[in-house]
Image (cartoon, rainbow, N blue to C red; front, side, top):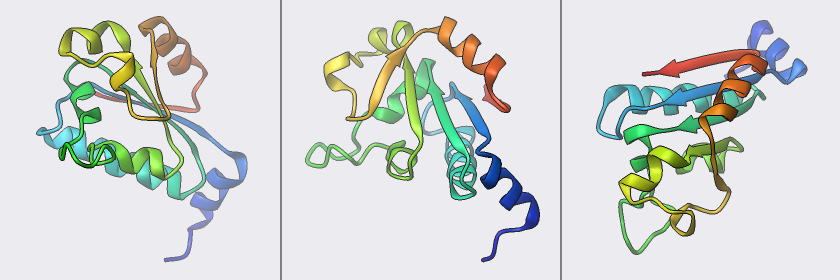
Length: 125
């Protein structure tokens, strides 16, 4: 499917899109956020996905034999950046040594900075 002129404009200017995701993996908003993130990445946008609260559970593998079977893996494999709220991940059992490769802890203060600097900020609450 060819890119529309609007999509090309986003791609050419390398827009930074920040998506905040707080819903757990079984919620519709979780998968909608993933689909939107992948759509932005396909247009060439720079994408940061900030996960916190129950959304951090989307970083746990669905199949213990396959560490890359976590629901947020398509965002990483498509070139997106995933940041995790440390203060809401650790109480849910997600520690630094359990984070998938390429995923890192961040703070809610950093989320505030990202949201003010982004070209587009999409909160999925």
